[in-house]
Image (tube, rainbow, N blue to C red; front, side):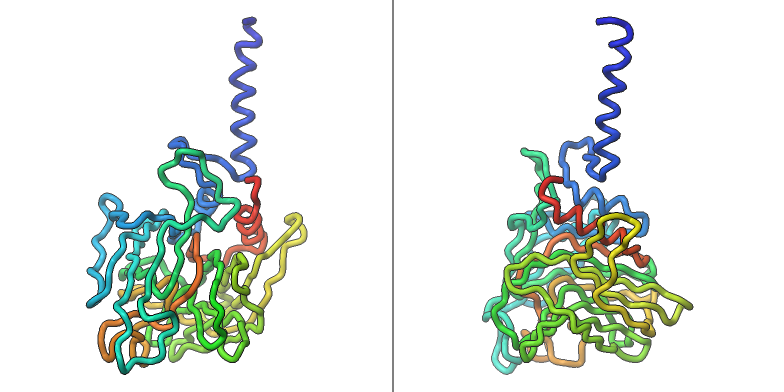
Length: 336
């Protein structure tokens, strides 16, 4: 081999690696490649990321804070690992419904099916990986996430997730993510399927109560894959712009997508000195209503989700429209 060729070969290999990283598909050196997940983890304002790809009985990561035990008569199925930091959660199946409670939304025995086939075409993986992309099939079970005092402020935020509903009923609400308190702070993202509306609805705390905003945006039909993102961009620390994004698409950065819904709102973030609980796939068990499984007991949160959820990410900034479009494109692309 000539001296010139000897130097050109490694340079050429470096160029190939640089090209792969440049287009957002820079795989980790461990060989456990998850294109979409890696892309999300590069966002500087990312606070927590739950891929929901965990196997049953996944233990807590080494050194992570201990999680509380399951509520009375509930079953814990393992850890919902936060890939970003230590906001890990627990997969929980609540007890069977008991007499005297409200009409069950989902059967008599709520459950979760973990490590189901991935619903993200762009969440590519290397064959033989031990950490394959996967989702969770929610059937009344949920993820409970302790949000400790001192956690990052969500005075501005973005919440994004991929969902694939499978309900046939149009008489219930279905929560995707709940981060709220009874003090009228925080937010909830859910689908209102009552009376056949099937709209995305946002509940935003104003410091006194949760205000309901019906976006009038049609929610996903059963069996369809949907990327949903909600952003809040503050203008003065009290008010700002609340936006809903459904499958945002953009051909280039000069033509960013527009939100499906925008509204100027008053928003009060959860006090950073307060320890609360967030939920994926359910509502809130601090609500004044009776928990859905046990009268006056520790039952499960309200309005459980029915369907598949994957790659839930929470940020402490309002991501730009082009960022959201990139996330959607990267997750939806089958050739990533």
